[in-house]
Length: 150
Image (cartoon, rainbow, N blue to C red; front, side, top):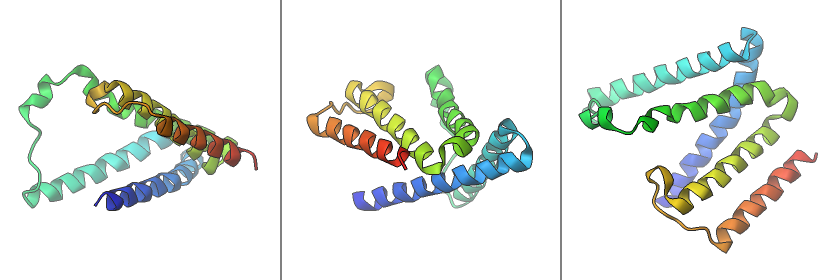
């Protein structure tokens, strides 16, 4: 089952690569990176609401638990990272290209993820750094550099 989950994330990653190109064209059509960013998130929100509506109609999801309102303040700002990513991707696609932009974004995600895992921040289960994990990050860094040098 884990392989299926990895495959699903590979497909989601491929969708993000396509989204970068689509959003760059949206910027050109809208005449503004900020408008393109907001349009992209509005479409995402509408899609999410539609899926939630169908899931609710099928009895697969209910309204959020009341505990949501007692959750730490920082649970509400998770979307800021996505907004920053989408805005920077829209602004930098023409300068970097989709492959370099994606490689740099993935490298940032991996490094931050290793630190978060190591310390168990944000409620993540602790997974300490190991030589193998560090080697994976080094290899990804080398891969990102190789993608950069055409």
